[in-house]
Amino acid sequence: MAIYGTAILSLCVITGLSIGKWLGSLLGLDANVGGVGIAMLLLIFATDRLRSMGRFTPESESGVVYWNAIYVPIVVAIAATQNVRAALHAGPVAILAGAVTVAACFALVPVLCKIGKRTPAESDE
Amino acid sequence: MSDLIIVLTENSLVTAFAVVGLTVAVSYSLSRWLTKGRLHGSAVAVLLGLVMAYFGGVATGGNKGVADIPVLAGMGILGGAMLRDLAIVATAIGVRVEEFKHAGLCGAISLFAGVFVSFVIGGAIAWGFGYRDAVSVTTIGGGAATYIVGPVTGSALGASSEVIALSVGAGLVKAILVMVVTPFVAPLVGLNNPRTALVFGGLMGTTSGVVAGLAATNPKLVPYGAMTATFYTGLGCLLGPSVVFFIIDRYL
Image (cartoon, rainbow over all chains, first blue to last red; front, side, top):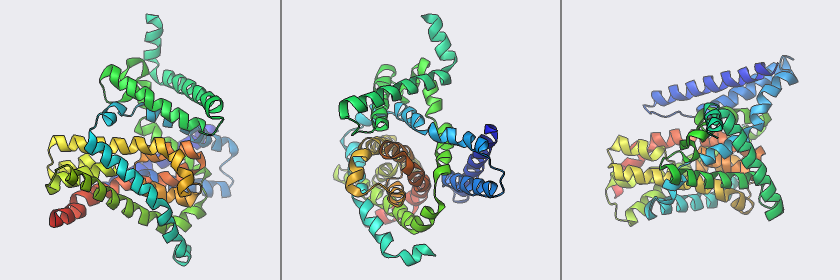
């Protein structure tokens, strides 16, 4: 049943976010450290395990696939609820700080990819 | 008419699904007819969403885009952190674990590089505009990381509210720019594979910006970028008020 997939997804999100929050408080931060990333790893391993046991049927999977597919609409809603007015009226310091940083980080994307590729031995471990 | 508004408001999340569906449909048509598909439909949808957010903000004076309009309050739920996280995690269902293993080191390096570069550039620009105290420089630098790192750093260091507001502004500009320009810049920086998406997420860090930018470029890349971006804000909040502040305080 589809709800099984959605329930597994939800459990992974809740567990991941809890671990992220715990990691944050461990570091003395009021921030979630990697909660979503941990939840993604949990989901990957949980579904992998269940699939190999034959317990993760296509019907169950459809409960996850729906939320995967609804992703772009959620992104549109995220965009539609940004404080665009504040960003446009933020003044030159904020606009320059944001824009130059974005430009610099884009420029670094190919550079950092090359660094990683030169040491395939390390990443193969 | 007023009955309709009552129904729309009472069922705000359902209304949001309908509104977003219409927005996506219009965007895909625009993409096909105006750009002959060169600009992806989801990129047009993100742009349209941002335009709606601007007018929502102008109309209401609020800070949540269209979600401040009562009829569209459901957009705040649909685009809020809860469903965003649920959907991001769901994208992991299409992920190849091998990609994470091979690019793990690369992703970790990109995270640290992204955080430091943001602080350095944001801080340098703040300095150039006459902010000479280490607290303000670090806070605005934090804003150039994300709009959460800025205020967290600023309140930890005791920055003025004007400076904290500036840091939030810098973070917003960054998030929105990443959403808008990623589909255009992606071919120039080779952003077309999982490995590069991991690096991209680590460098940019703004989860909303990264996932929207990647969704508009190639939805298959979303989980990889989201994976590293999700560690960025935590890392920034950790390093900002501590290591970065000490370095800036020492050399300023």
